[in-house]
Amino acid sequence: MAARAGFGRFRVYKTHIGFHDWVVAAPNQKAALKAWDVRENLFAMGAAKAVEDEEAIELAMKSPGIPVALADPSAKKVRKARRSGRKAGR
Image (cartoon, rainbow, N blue to C red):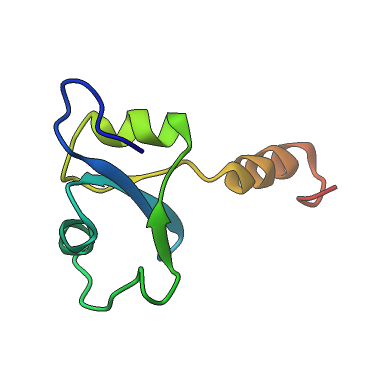
């Protein structure tokens, strides 16, 4: 993603930590790793990448440098299934 007007030279990166996918707007990969508070290079391991999803980009750009948890679409399916008495995924 190229720099957007008004946001400087930020890119949005995504990784999975714990039970959530996290995005952060950062000037580079090193800054993203620092924002996520991880020591390992998640990018080299293939566990983090630049994001191209417009919704995730918009969400992360609201607070550059601060990691934001993405809503888990499968969690919605589980809650809906529990309310209806069915198993998730059906």
